[in-house]
Image (tube, rainbow, N blue to C red; front, side, top):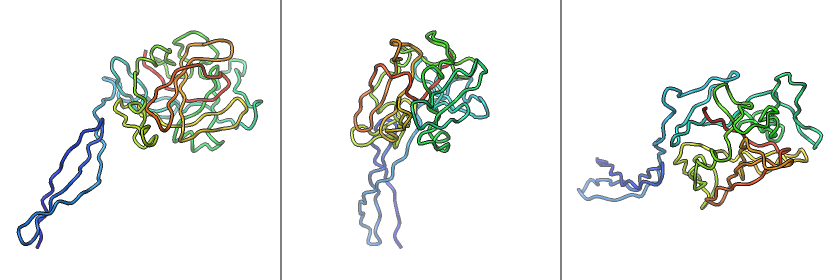
Length: 241
């Protein structure tokens, strides 16, 4: 009968430890080294102290502490679904009735469940233009400013969830931010780039047409900044006050 002795050779790469080999003892007393490919994700990040979860509008969100910042760990998914097939399908103020509208990628509500809703900038801000506004975030939280988004640092793979991105752009999720490549809704009303890009709003306006934000590509480690058309529908993450 063979006796199996497992020897783990650990190589730490961000949040992943790969068990590279195991040694099997043969019946004749010799040992054979066998390559294995099992990978285990370890959580070196922690939820925010005193606020491990947040219940909001019927959903529970996890939190993650990144440096001095406390973030929701998931993209926001709040509001009433509205389909989008053209530029005319724009989220609107609705006379200040407090109804939040969201797009779901590909007009499929399951995508909102999986990746969060997509919001135009004015809707995300709830039509308040002040930097750091609560917008559609829960009470005690807000749409991050551009400088607060910048403070997340990089590289981009540090922010992407495991399984997001490919090659040199494969996510390591070292930060715990768990970014998903959720795609976006264009100014023409169509949807594009799911599994390829993700964009996040800041609460800072660039000009009458653009607001500042960040985006992550699928196949590089970059963490990009710049203006995003306010009429695009993109993802929202909330930051604790």
